[in-house]
Length: 305
Ligand SMILES: [Zn+2]
Image (cartoon, rainbow, N blue to C red; front, side, top):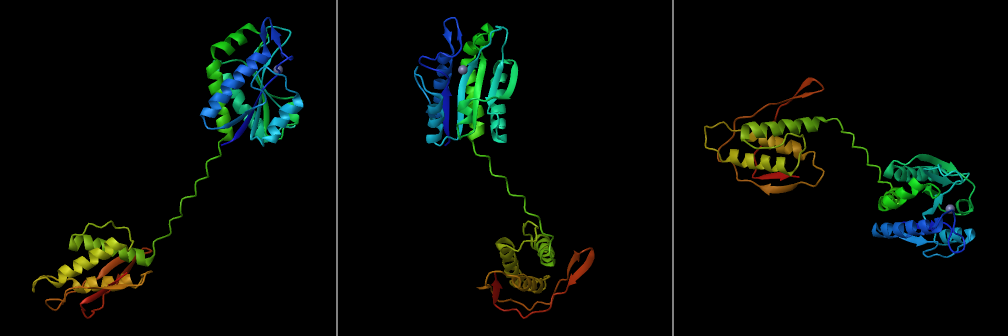
């Protein structure tokens, strides 16, 4: 939650710019109060330099911001000129704005201009006390000319849209930037072990009707498939092709790469001696890499990771 100080310009005996019975201080306060409500709805902490028709000195306005350790200071004004044709929206920053202040002001300026396609007078540096003496990033909005009839009509007709647009821009400013996503992990090239495990998985799928994902990862599923297949082979009737040697070799080979301490699980002893063995053929760096299983004595216990 950010602390935003809203500063409705003028007030009390200082009406600001005047056009007939219309006084800038009232437009500023109306905008400020509506903006406060909207930003509070959006979960922000809003502090007003004034929330009624009272005079507040320029020094006190900056003081409110500085004492509240504000994250953003927005002074709300309307423009005026002797030529009633002058119109449009501008946002003021100090004469020595930081890049953040320029960016913030540009965001709010665009947001306001876009509401009713009003003429864009841009972001301008000017020497104003409230911008100079405020520690927080500061800006002053000039939401149309009170001396221009059409600008006043737009201000009244699109009042809620202006409030929402400015609030949205402020939310963009005070919302912390999303954390930069961590770069995707660089896939490590498959090792010989990965390729052999992938070959084992292929064999388990084709010869033993397992349904393993061939990813070269020797995980619990591949291990369980090896144990299940071995158990099935060991209890096969005599005379059928039997691949127990291969499976025992595969288990021993894979478990030789265990990072966890292997544990022993019992398997049923073979019903018949196994005569058959398989050769495991894989390719490493484009060259055939052949692993011939060595006959191993079949024991009733198999180590797994
Ligand atoms: Zn003013």
